Amino acid sequence: MDFTISPRIEDYRARIARFVEQVILPLEADRASYDAHENIRTELLDDLRARAKAEGLWCLQLKQETGGQDLGLMGMAVCYEEMNRSIFGPVVFNAAAPDDGNMQVLEKVGTEAQKAEWLQPIVRGDVRSAFAMTEPAPGSGSDPGGMMLTTAQKVGDSYVVRGRKWFITGAEDADHFILIARTSDDPRKGLSAFLHRRDTPGFRIERRIPIMGPEEHGGHCEVVYEDMVIPAENLLMTEGDGLKLTQIRLGPARLTHCMRWLGLSKRCVEIAHEYAQNRFAFGERLSKRESIQMMLGDLAMQIELGRMLVMKAAWELERGGFARKDVSMAKVHVANLLHKAADTAIQINGARGYSKDTPLEWIYRYARQARLVDGADEVHKMVLYRNVEKEGRDFWAWDVGA
Ligand SMILES: Cc1cc2nc3c(=O)[nH]c(=O)nc-3n(C[C@H](O)[C@H](O)[C@H](O)COP(=O)(O)OP(=O)(O)OC[C@H]3O[C@@H](n4cnc5c(N)ncnc54)[C@H](O)[C@@H]3O)c2cc1C
Image 1 (cartoon, protein in one colour):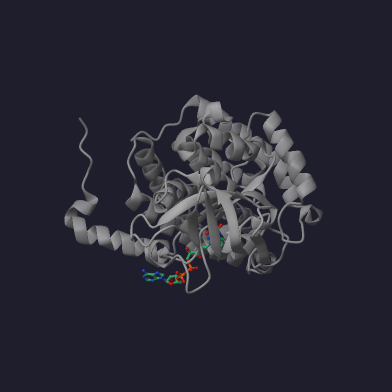
Image 2 (spheres, rainbow, N blue to C red; image 1 turned 120 degrees about the vertical axis):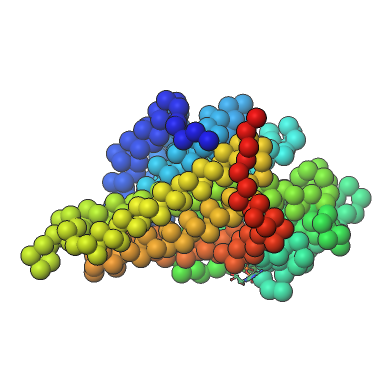
């Protein structure tokens, strides 16, 4: 694979970098920009989103006919990293989870009518969306195929949905939901995916779950389905394709998480490096200490390793592969890297690192979720081990070109 990027991608990267530096970072540094849930205030966000749109930096991940710029996954890796130099970045460019993953999956699997009704309003920025799969115990968590309790029962031309979901990111602000529910007991084709609106009778948000970290807009909610009736045309793909849709969504969505987390990891190094260069202790700049150099050198190396894993997975997906092993390795590596980057940067910044004068403590609290969402570390490692068991030494086989 070739790691050079085209002048077009470099142009987007440079424009995003300027926008983040000149427009977003000054707001991020001002405590007055934050809402009660430690994210950017909606009025400010609306203004920034309008500016990003006007500058042609909007929904870059989507195809041109959908309203995007067709960057491809490798181009997205370059640009998403740049967007998430700021903790406020991705949502400004409509590249934040869960809208990002929802838009990409709807673009891939939606019918033309579904795209017009459900995807385009998210692309325009008129509505936000959520993805509802996880349930409180004893329901679906790491093992949705085996344990999902929410049911969608076909009655005439409609489905009646009953069940409970939780940790549904963005639910409080979302209008469009992608719901995964059980339609049969078939172990592989037992789940189906549906679309529904927030105001559909029978659906309600029970609570916004308090969490340790800062929150995405709309929080992480527990939601209830009490005989919610939706028409059969709201089915995504065909009945029994719920797990397939989840795989189609989660492969790229895990990778775009990694792209953003690499941007946050680089920001941690940037803040730590700046402090270490300017702070003196025991007659010496901190950056002259070998122990500090080891910490920052190691992080620089781990970030580059993460980028290699992300780029390899992006390249594999772009050429039509599934990249399951590559995505799992990237997800585990980058999630742990983000945690380490924030922790190390706080250490190097001393008491300042523990304050809210820098975004490091925000990133540190946010980072803890990275090892859980979209598959806990252990689940990805289990999947990797299953491949080792099946493939043996061929786990690492080279791809031989024509
Ligand atoms: C901030 C946040 C946002 C989220 N957003 C969404 C969302 O928008 N939509 C949605 O549907 N879900 C969402 N989730 C849920 C998330 O996808 C689940 O938390 C995740 O899939 C794990 O499921 P669980 O929490 O039920 O963990 P469980 O399945 O209960 O697992 C608990 C722990 O057991 C261990 N474990 C599990 N399986 C294995 C195994 N095979 N081998 C070894 N150890 C294992 C792991 O350490 C795991 O962390 C979100 C979660 C968080 C924290």
